[in-house]
Image 1: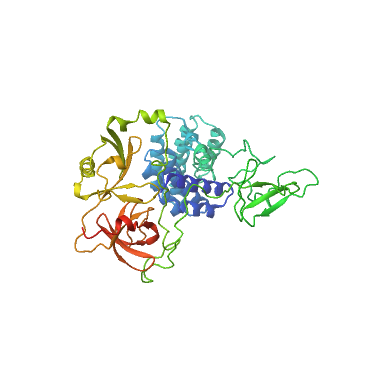
Image 2: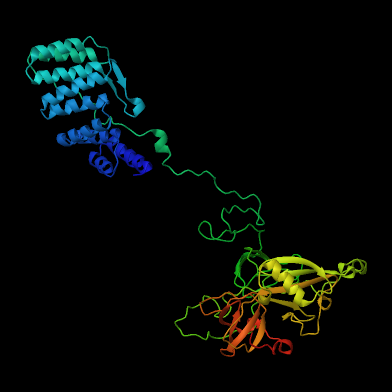
Amino acid sequence: MLYIELIKLWDEAVRAIDSRDWLGALTKLNQITEHNCRTMFVVASTHIALGQVDSAIKALDQVIAKDSCLAVGFFQRSAVHMMANRLEEALADCIWAQKFMRENPVIDYKQLGLRYKMYSWQVLYNAAAVHSRLQQWDKAREILTAASQERGAGRSNLIDIALEAISRREVLEPLLVPEGEVFRPRKQEVDQLKPRDFLGEAKVITSLIPNDDFRGFDPLRPQKPGYYEPKVEDGQDSRYLIMKSAYVAKGAGELTVPAGAEVFLYSDDDKDGLAVVISDGKELANGIPHPPALKPPNRPQAPSQRSLERHPSYAGATHTTPPTTGNSTRVPTQQAQTSPQESGSVIVKVHYTYTMALRVPLETSFRDLQDKIAEKLGQPAMNVRLRHRRNGNRALTPLNGDERLDSLEGVAEYGRAQIWCQNEEPLANRAILYQMVALYDYNAQGPEDLEFSEGDTIDILSEVNDEWLEGHVAGNIGIFPRSFAHRDTDSISGASTD
């Protein structure tokens, strides 16, 4: 049982005792699965208040079993034993209580949570009460006389009355811890049960909305009943509106707002037909190229295949734009004159799963370049396929020496060249119809899909339909949308079986 749960139930039980709801307190105490000696004392006190003597004795037995030196536990049990007419057990508990008083005239249990001071004369009084029930009047008078010599509040009157009762041969009633006085949990532990806000309430430091006191993340969402209404000048027709269509800002001071967005209208009397509004900050997505225009209507699989959340062809595709470096980049004439190309070397930037750069002689053949890159990558040269981007073409063309390009002079510009590299495992027992180059990344959405990256060369094995192709990349075979790859029929159509 968690300690915080114990404290919570213990505190609720004590509160019920304070209101004299004994049954409610007992219900809370019974929910505690791991008692300590103090909570068991509370259980015993509750049974005593309900007149359940046997249950109280059992609870006090557990109290003493958990703390065998608790003097007040023996004192309380001696009184309950007298109530049950177990006189020998009661007398033994008085002896143990006196022993664990350790010759102290008083023990204050306030530090343990019990607002009660137990005096040594009270223990002697209970011992005299036991002897009175045993009809041992002389022994009872002797013990009471010794108790009268002890120090403690309330002693004199009660001892005198008891001596008179003994002289009349009357039985003495035992002393108990007062009803309602029980061990209580520490106040600090109870205070920690309350939720505490360590961060405090959010505070608006600055806002575009005048007099904004919103505490959330979106200033145009409901707060109290109704909507937050920014303060406007008298006479202005301000209200909330919904955009029917998107508006893209055309200059400074204008706001881009998507269709369906909620705006607060300040004023619509602008002479140019524009309105002054507050938008909730949602803008049109930008910087991400749109998917290919061609959208296959259905996947060429049975209905049992896993459905996709978005478009069946492009749900897993992330599109990237072609690199901006290459032939479109120009440098000043003075810089071109000091480029490494004139010194007889060229820097080759190789795009792989990571990017690396090599400096090689300008006259390096494609075969030698392939060997150098394969050595850097730790791959067999026969499995490394190189491609480059020709002028005016966004697709990547294989570098195989079939284009009458014997060295890097035909692809390098201003002492630099970009090469895309792909690790290709040989394909056996399948005929390659032709090859295509990936224009975009495509992430597989099922076990039947072929996953590839932009620039990968794809071996086309079959045409599933007008929209889907079966291809091979890096030892993997699967299907993919035709619109994600480009086929240069002039230079690639002649590919055959590896």
